[in-house]
Length: 132
Image 1 (tube, helix red, strand yellow):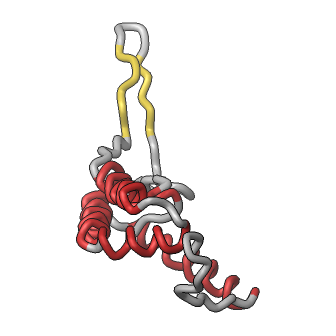
Image 2: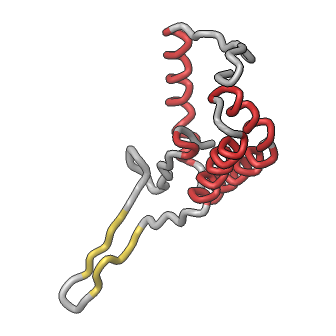
């Protein structure tokens, strides 16, 4: 706690092997996430936003203890996480969009998921780092 200098929590260090396993697990989980319909991903992100808001006080207190920032600032930062989740949950993904349509030409923009496929996956920096 920067305000008191007192230790309020302990976090174990991970080994390189544990880090590699976590990265591998995240990479293995991504295809399942990307395969979800956008509506389902949106539901998960909205659920995450609700959980963040429901735990606002606890999370803000923890952030204040960790970083020493005023509680009001910590609450604003935590609410920002919920706002990011809600924002990206509300994104409408257009897989095909007509850019130009005249007698002489028609330009269509097509998008797909990273790595191909018909389903797109939003790439938000949710909470600056992750999304459900």
